[in-house]
Structures are given as C-alpha cells and as structure tokens.
Length: 252
Image 1 (cartoon, rainbow, N blue to C red):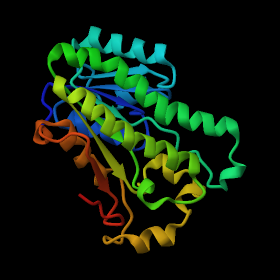
Image 2 (image 1 turned 90 degrees about the vertical axis):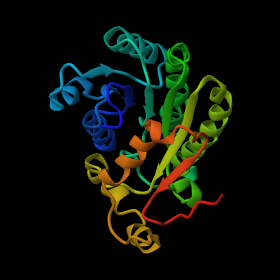
Image 3 (image 1 turned 120 degrees about the vertical axis):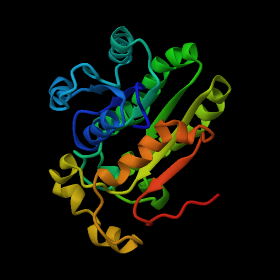
C-alpha cells in the first residue's frame, strides 16, 4: 500500500498495459483517474472501486480535452499527486520502412506520444505546485537504445520522451516535482497480442537478446512504475529505468 490516498492520473489506463497499471495503483491504495480515449468508464467499472476510481474520456493530443480531465479530477478528488504518462500509439502499428510510413500515421504517433505527454504535464503541474510537489512517470521504451529499424516514428517519439523527462526534471525539481521514466521492452499485453505484426516482429532476436529469456507481461513492469510514483524514489529525478529482461544494459 505504498500509494495510500494518493491521487494518480493514468493516461491510456483503460486497456492493455495501462489497465494493468490502473489495477496495481488501486491495489496500492491510490485513488485513480483513468484518462483514455477508449472506454475509460467501462474500465473504471471493472475495478469495482466506485469511490476511488474515476474514468474520464480523454484525448491527450487535444489540450482542451486534457484540461477538462484535470478539472474533473480536481473536482472529484481535490488534488493530483501522480501522473503516469502512458497513453501512446503502438499496439496498432505495422513495422515498415521509414519511407513507407504515411504522413498521417507519423503525425498521429507524434501527436499522442510526444505532444500528448507535454499537454498532460502542462495541465497537472499547476496542481502539483500548489501542493508543494508530485511525481511524474513517463512511459518510454527500451527500443530507443536499440535503434530498432522499421518503427522509426515510434522509436523517435520514445526518444523524445526520454529527452523530455530529463529536461522536465531540471525545470520542476526546485518545486518538489520528480520526473522519471520507465522504458519497457516488448510487453505482451492483451492489446499488443491482438496485433501479430507487432508480436511476431523480430521475436526471435528479442528473446535471444534477453538475459531473462522469457516473454514479458504487464506484471513485469508494474512494480517499476509504482516505485517511481511512490516516496521510495523521492531522491530520483531525470532517470530512465529499463525493464526489458536484461536486453539493454544502461550506463551511468
């Protein structure tokens, strides 16, 4: 129960790995706001904690949608202690050469994965300032360190997440707000498993590269996100935790 009575906004928290985060945060004692473009009300009902879970339809690429979600969160719970920037375009992608990616798809990935994160941070920071601090956890990807081919828009967007994490940590540290990132490897959430273009992409190479040679599931990442959202990580900021079974070794 490391997050007892904390208020956490989890973007993209209605499905896939985001829903796993939502479940874990509730189990850790948090009050959770599921901010998602797809079925957040249904997801909130599944958690069966009506007094502690709020589902808010949210398009993170739309600044007004994000601001409305933050306003609703503050009306319901009075504060925001944690932001988990999880919403991203990934599970629906098809690996392809960079010059075959359509401009529409490129722009959508950047709008959600990069601009969406920026929109959410801008919207929650005023509340965190008023409270004297907070925790921001950005979901990046271990794919950045590998320079994986055929997903250039996704790799580029997650590289931007890591850079944004470092810059924000410098800006927000004096106000008691920590900003860190978790970089998972390929996680077999239910939404990812629905797309064989992703699950079969370089699967043998992914497995061979891992020190822990097994598939990874949402429960393998939840603990790292909870750690960075809790007071256990109070003296960490600007860091990226790679959670990929020992495929990529980070450097100091």
